[in-house]
Image (cartoon, rainbow, N blue to C red; front, side, top):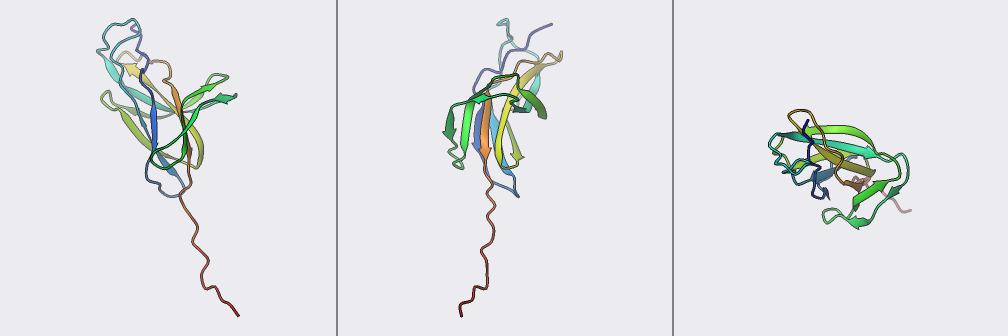
Length: 145
């Protein structure tokens, strides 16, 4: 069986427009071009997008999103194995995924897989503090007596 190359480039997170009480996020990546053994990757079938959760302690360096000012991280590590939930499977030409998440910290990673079903390990893990962009209306009909 051929080993699928690990997704090499950094997972980049950026916030987008907000909808309802969920915040949007966009993930982007660079597609792999080689297998783990260095041979050309000629049968890339797609990318799997995961939301990951750390059952232990997260170690990360934090920055700020240039889109909405939310805190982000591009290299989170977990003291234990990441738990993962599949969000989507994209085609072999796709390099972005946009989704929504409830407010709070969320972490994501991607893997590549080939036509034989071989799947790479997780890419680097990126995270974002998804902001709640819905503000309540101001009270009305203020009266002074």
